[in-house]
Length: 413
Image (cartoon, rainbow, N blue to C red; front, side, top):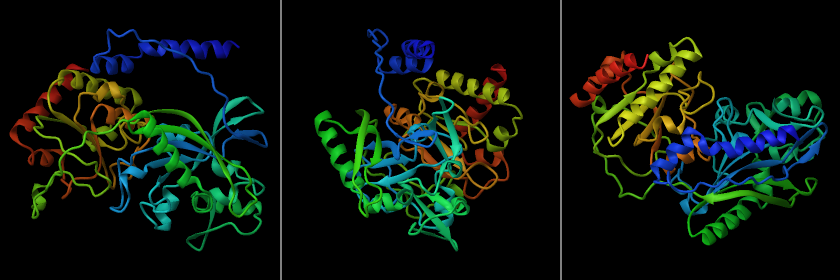
C-alpha cells in the first residue's frame, strides 16, 4: 500500500516535470488548468513458472512514418513489438531491438541477412518475477524453456547460419540457439490483419492518425493456426511531421560537397534556412571519461537550445541520442533540444552503434510532435581525418557558430 501511494504521488507530481512544463509552454498551454488523473490497470499477461508476462506487446501506428521499401503503404500502419512487457518497445533502450512490422507487408524485413536478423533481434525480456514480487529484465535464454507453449511462434532456431521453424521437441542445450523473430507468429496468426482493422477503426473515430499500446495473447498455441486476443492498453493521436512537397536533389552531386548521407529510412520533408549547427564530435564525446562530464555536456546542449530559440538550427552527434546508456549516445531529453529543426544521429566504424530507428518510442514521438526531423546517418562521406575538415565544408556562418559553441561550453563549465 505504501508503494502504491508513493507511485500515485509521483504521477500527480509529474505535471511539474521540466520537460512537461517546456512542452506545455511550446504549445501555449502554460495558463491552462492542467488536470492529472490516475488510472490503475490490470497488468496483461500469463504466468509461466515464477514469471508473469504477455506473449507479445508493443506499440502500433495507423500511419507508417518510415518505410524501408517503396511498396510499403503508409496508410496500413506499423508495429513495434517485443516479447514480454512492452516497456522495451516504447522506451529507447541501449542494448536491445524490437521486431518492426510494416502491416502492409508484415513479413518484409529491413534486411533478410541472417547476420542482421541475429544482430537486431530482441536479447532481453521485461517481466514480473512472482517469487520476489519485482519487475525484472532478464536475458531471453534465461527465461526460455522447451515447454513454453507459444515458443514456436515467437522464436526460430539457428541452424548452419540460417533460421528454421521449431518442428520438433527441444532440449535445454538448444535454447542458446533460439532467436526471437516472431516469424511464425506473423505468418500463422491473423495478427497483421487484425491490427490493420483496429488501427483504421481507431483512426476513423479519432479523426486523426493514432498510436496505441497493446498486448497479445495466443489462445491455443498447440493449433497450426492459433487464435489470438489483442488487448488495447492506451491510444492517443499520433505525432506526425507536416506534409511537405517532394524535394529534388541534384542528380550529380560531387562527393566533396556531401557533409552527411543516409540511405536508411529518411523522413519525407525538408528543413530550410539553417543558420546554425550544434555539432557534438564523436571523438570528443567518447573521450569524456566519466558520466558526470557527459552530464555537463548535456546541460550545455540544453543551454544552447534555449539560447537558439527562434533560430533555425540542427543537432548532429554520435550514436543514439536519448538513450539511457551514455556509452551508446548523448543522453539528452526532449527539454534539451526542443527548439531544434532536426536531429541527425551519426554512426560508423569506431564512432557508435549501427543506426537503429527509434520508431514508436516516447522519445521519437516527442520529436515528431515538435516537428523535429529524426535522421539516421552514416558518418561523413568521405570521412574527414579531423573535426576541422568537417567544418571546412560548412558556410562561414556555421564556422563562426562552432567558435561560439566552444565559448558557450567554456562558460557552462
